[in-house]
Length: 247
Image 1 (cartoon, helix red, strand yellow):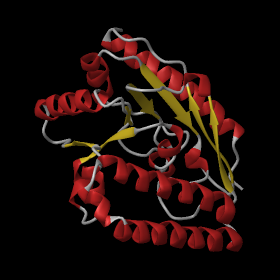
Image 2 (cartoon, one colour; image 1 turned 30 degrees about the horizontal axis):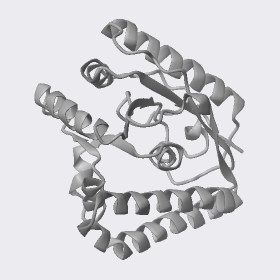
Image 3 (cartoon, rainbow, N blue to C red; image 1 turned 120 degrees about the vertical axis):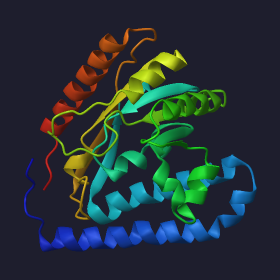
Image 4 (tube, rainbow, N blue to C red; image 1 turned 90 degrees about the horizontal axis):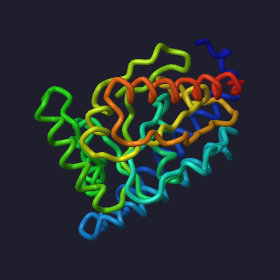
């Protein structure tokens, strides 16, 4: 897709927001280091505070608001959420949208100093994408452990951020998780990539929408599950993208 060339005002507000979000990341990352010695809930509190500051800054600095739809489908307690991934905002908003999210993330993120410490302490699920079946077994074990804590496991079926309108590229990992856990799967659509692109640091004003969709019941066969998941997410995402306009 194409976006309008960013105006000087958009560029300046984007730069100010990047300074805002990175500044708070540094302040909280260093100031909350003692929380790493305590229970996981302390790190969860810090992550949620950063998310709230990030979302507030989006509206106040960039003019980008966050809207949530489909609240009747929002999972409570132990759950599996499969989300469309278009933007960094997709990894921030769930801290506000869900009670206790746990992301399935690339193992490489654990290697960053300070940031990786928080990721590890918060109980995110690392995946070594080069480990094959061993990675799938580890993913299942970690996911069952997090579900026992009544957390919401958030997985991005495409694995990486995609431009709005790009052809879907769903991976098999979500189907394996769905099969092994025996839980319903709640799809989540978004148009966040219209305003916070997958690449680059120019952000646009508008309304980024996250929409919880009707859960997919457990025990579907793998082909039916994948077809249903992709159809629901892509149809809802296409609708949100058609509604949204980056200005």
